[in-house]
Length: 103
Image 1 (cartoon, rainbow, N blue to C red):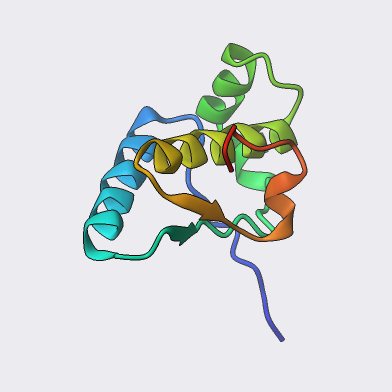
Image 2: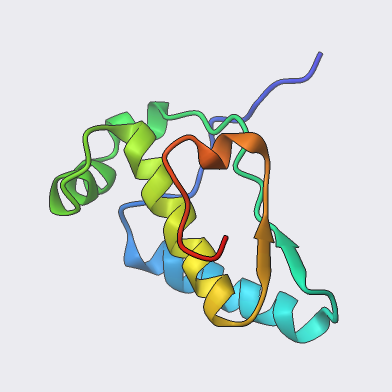
């Protein structure tokens, strides 16, 4: 069967967003298409519940829980891509907490 890994990006660290923006910048440079798929499906929240940095981000951003942390994560990455002129697509779960404008 298919198993879902519990290894997820730490949404509490700025270095995570810096890393992802660097990778996405490379993808943008290599891609002529207007769409970038960001996934977002079936993200396990166990690590975020246990991670002090993710819990700190939840408090700093006045989020209710890890589900809202995923929405924060998706909105932040989506906004970056939209600002770079790309259209964001992803699995249906990315809409659960709302999307960034123009996504």
